[in-house]
Amino acid sequence: MREYTLGLYEKAMPPELTWEEKLTAARNAGYDFLEISIDETDNKLARLDWSKEQRRELAELMDKTGVPIRTMCLSGHRKYPLGSSNPQICARGMEIMEKAIRLAEDLGIRIIQLAGYDVYYEDSTPETVERFGKNLKKAALMAAKAGVMMGFETMETEFMNTVEKAMAYVKTVNSPYLGVYPDMGNITNAAVTYNSDVLKDIESGAGHLCAVHLKETVPGIFREVPFGTGHVDFPSVISKTWELGVRRYVTEFWYTGNPEWKKDLDFAANMMRPLLDAQ
Image (cartoon, rainbow, N blue to C red; front, side, top):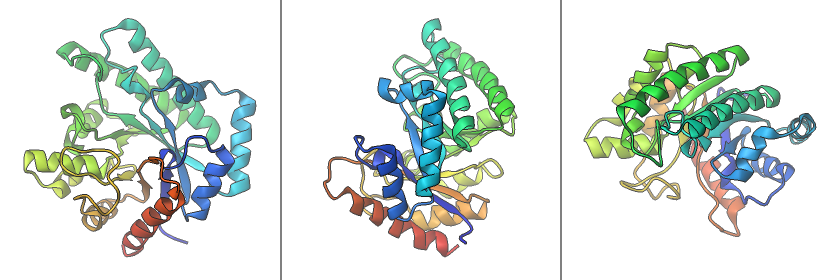
């Protein structure tokens, strides 16, 4: 048995697939688990209101296929951020947080990846930053009650594009249920922007790294960069995160219409497995 688990981001597959088809495709490509997406679209946010029966059916499919859903990418806060100046949007953001934790409980999801934004579609101000911090503390208490881990994704914006910036909030909240779930592509881009050392940035999260997104980027481009065509030094970042105790990894990439998308799943797994096995 391997000493780590490798997950597949749900959006790497065509959205029209059934859950059984997605879980089966992940299994056939050699992944250990699937990361579910709860983004800002209505159809993804509707998952937070699944009935008990729907949740039970998905749990049964996990058992049937042998591929569990163990992490959640909760990017719905981009539209409904925890720091919003609009009280209704902010309240919706907290509702999403509470429901996401409940869904994680019901499905056996261990880690919720949080978007590192105080706001996204409005201007950041000292007030939005303060509000984000206050609501984050409330969210950490929700997570503590459920025993579900939350981890900040390092984003593509100045607010939280490094592990070091995410750690400032982790230290302030000071909860065992809030850590960092960094994106290796985003922090690599940030290191280029700031002319800094990506491995030192990773080290700043020592003791608080709950999982890692393995994603390819190039300077200024944060999405849909095929593995092997960007500038992320995967051997180095995997070695460093492994040294710091990370054992849960997710390949993050997107289905973009390629009819041979299953080969993309195989390629990503076959690229990352040897690097992880070598640790």
